[in-house]
Length: 235
Length: 92
Image (cartoon, rainbow over all chains, first blue to last red; front, side, top):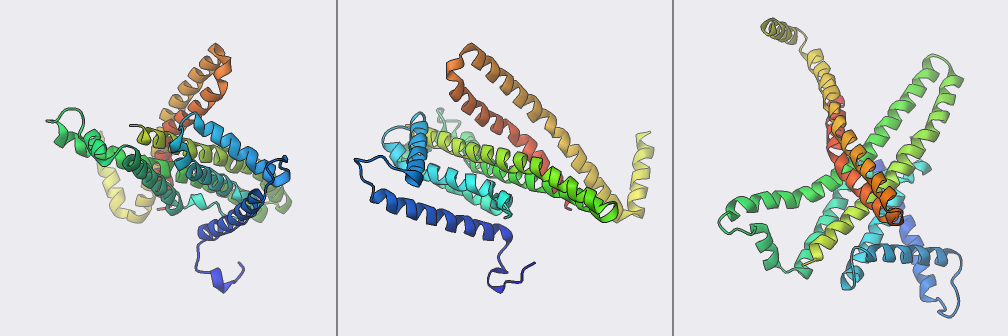
């Protein structure tokens, strides 16, 4: 492809992640500057109105699951997660590789959520209550219960990360297989037929795997993080 | 009967070691994807119950939709593990 030495050692997943991060930071900084200059007596317009509506919607939505002080603590994190994931999963529409199709990036998201769950437990429950919860209600059985509960603690981020990764990767793999079939048709049989097949198939593949599954998975990860955080922060 | 089948498989394996292992990997990938039965049944059950719940209480549709999506994603996990194993076996 293009021989560009500066970013050549980076894998395509990291490149698309960096592009998404740059785009989102520019948008957030611009919106932040606009919101700080906002006149409270007038109704906002354009981009600011859109952002205010989205943030308001998510605050109301999260309010059904997390309330009060905890919403202020977890709300920004959860909103950042869903914004990034929704953009990262649909980024294949713009010709970039979806970054979540790499197990490292998907797992780092689940590690972030795991870290937030632990912070929530320490902050809102206290360490001693957590250790008591790990040991179980019966004191004598605690040598058996502690390993089982520890495995349960670790399996949460593991399954969340793998779910995110495999969904996105299977979309990439299946789309790649269908496109390879079209390329094979155009190379061996008829060029126009293969091109038409690929053009026709790409519409359905991208609608199915990028828009539908990608947004569903972003929402599911957000929802699971919300439920886990609200369970962890309730006493 | 099984003894003869096993014997022929081992003889085949010693003769065509490399092709035998890659062929068995493809066979294993096919067998692993059979696990798709479970999530299919589970997700269909959850979806049916959600449709029943919406029919019984149409005003709670939003909450039912969110709950259904999350539970179906959780039920999907085992099938995704099978898919991961299958893809790893194909890429072997």
